[in-house]
Length: 325
Image 1: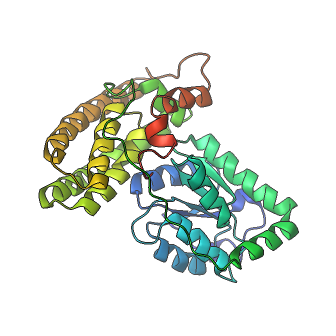
Image 2 (image 1 turned 90 degrees about the vertical axis):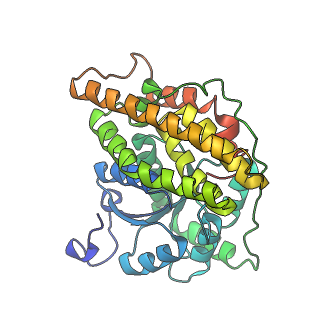
Image 3 (image 1 turned 120 degrees about the horizontal axis):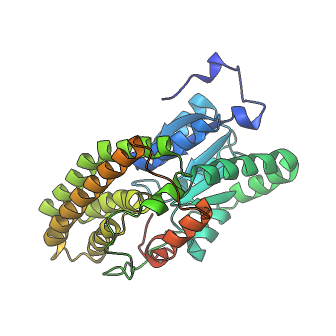
């Protein structure tokens, strides 16, 4: 829920822990998880699901930092970063990209247009809070030189270069048969049962809408609709450590990118079954959480568990081969 800054302060907050963060992401699940993580760290949060709306909310709420997804319908994240840098009121705004992109051309494009850093999906709450604090601290300690760099970047007479990536027809993940990887998911939520429960309830509340969007796109033969809806669900599948769902969504996204939807209906029915199995596994997990039977693996750090999950799907999720994240 958005709060009115004027109720606590007449202008920008002076301390990092009182910072207002604007989250820009078309995926309500990813945005919700980010908001939850930041609010538990004492941050004030405003959400936007579109780049054009983000600029309006920047003027209205005066955030101290922007976290933006890179791939969104309409104006994308790289274009949004460029627009912010060209705006005299916000050219020095700290910006972090929150994305599955770690592919070098994407990282270079984000940096070229003024992005201060990146939070890679999937992420843990601790990682998000640390990245935001590090970015703001760097700005505090190097405000003068940072401002000069941003003005120079914004003045470059160029426009964002769209980057197209070929999407593999199938996933190469060895873990593609897994329905739900508990220990990996616990790593993403820092082993916090309450955060796990809130995140799962958020996912379950949004799944019917996400699934219906994919079904409608398949029925209508809507390539762009299928690409967008598959992209949205892909991020959730990665965060909730659901390789089986992820593999199918990657295939649907690949079909949309290639223009050949021949196998889309069959893949959709596979997706329905995989989501039913995932929902059952999540319900079982929640029951174990309620019984106090869920604990992270002894000796494994959250980052170790995230790395273990990221490696099998690195070619599809972390390195850009899936096209968008």
